[in-house]
Length: 152
Image 1: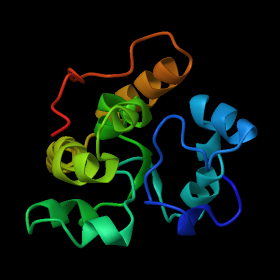
Image 2: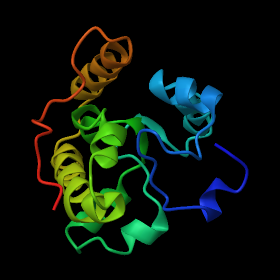
Image 3: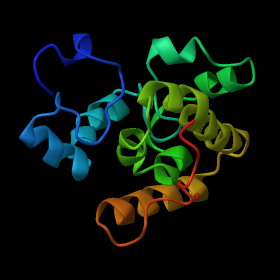
Image 4: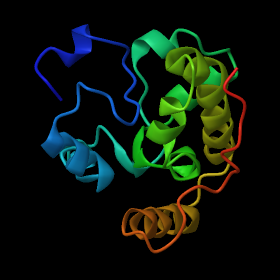
């Protein structure tokens, strides 16, 4: 991203965001921007699979039930990441991307993450890792949920 991008807009990035550099667009499209998080996994701060970490500005808006995802080690990929692998495109089509994210996408992603947190199994984690790799490689459609959702 461009220098000072965090001060030039919301903590969300939609497709076509001017703060993303050309190289950044390639890294994001191929998900190579996630590779540095492998260091976090090696240090034990993250897991390969789990709820994606969220910015504190948004976690403050979680309900008591939604806060349960914070008790699980965050992951590089997870069910919500797979369901909304095209999140940047969805945000770009919204009239108000931040409102759409907080009111709709974040809530739906949290439902996926809560379901995962209730039933964490190694075999399921392996399945999620392989589905993520396949989705990034373009071998399978990434979304598991119909992305035709209201932007209101």
